[in-house]
Picture 1 (cartoon, rainbow, N blue to C red):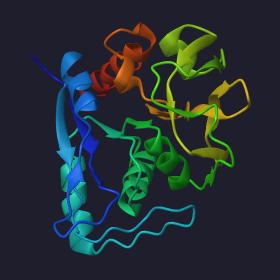
Picture 2: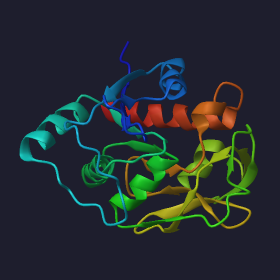
Picture 3: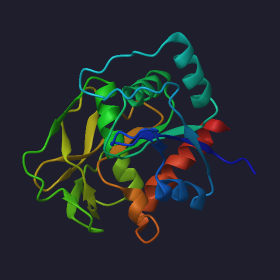
Length: 229
């Protein structure tokens, strides 16, 4: 069987420990395996944490870059996961995927880094009432019917979870594919790429019982499979 290999980009823990750790979310890994693909971790090739901002820069040495790209080239697609701390190297990976048309899916903070990678702007919320909750469903989103995201879910309105404290104020060259009712961008994409799409919510938390969320993984894996063949 010709299985798709997806690289999940690991993240540093937000807190500083004497022995720093990196992580991959269990439920995201499982969503990949449950949809008949293979998950592997993409590990940073350096020890220092450098927070990603709107003015991130490529600070990787030649060797660090070569080792990181070696990992990326093992994969058919890349996923930038959510989480509190984002490294600049996540933006580097997103930019590399964008420039080389490698399928990439971003989730929450991963969406922020995919936006930053191409020159967009991320800002902090002043109020979190409608967007930061551990509930399964927090609010509704409106899906643009001319978008790839609409092709995935096939609906103009769906319910999503919401665990973020930042938002996209400028998409750069990307196009919004969904909005919350209060105008926050909930998905972005670039239709000129094989798959450069990101969502602000967490489909990996809901995929087992919400077909809309699982369709995101199914569609992405299918794109990667077609690209692999």
